[in-house]
Image (tube, rainbow, N blue to C red; front, side, top):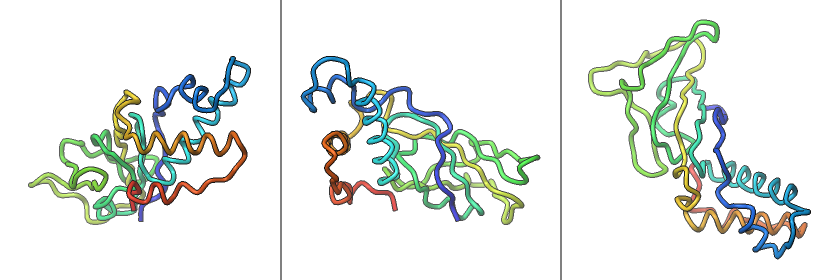
Length: 175
């Protein structure tokens, strides 16, 4: 079983900038900048939770009970494997990421051992996998439909009018 994805290194910036959101909300001046910045962060967090995608470059940790659980990762887009450890929390055993590779394409990624390398069949304690994920460090790399949903979520919270964005994201979810 795979546990919840945990952010280890957060993105350096948000996928949409404050000035663009203020124009979208038709806000002049800077009196509400802190509130709008909070709305941007919350919208990104919600979108990442709903879809399983991480928009900008960051490092996340996935915890699994067995190596078979890593056949399908619950997060994406995965760029690379940063670190893998398993075993007791006090004395974990590391696996060189060079002994592993990413399977699949796009958002449907998994982890497998390179030919000739054998993963342990059973392990005592959790398997922790640190992954480099995201569309890039530049916000323009984030797909336009996901950026649009961010604006919709922000407008919804700003106007205090609930909106259901899940239908807009049905093709962007990692299951």
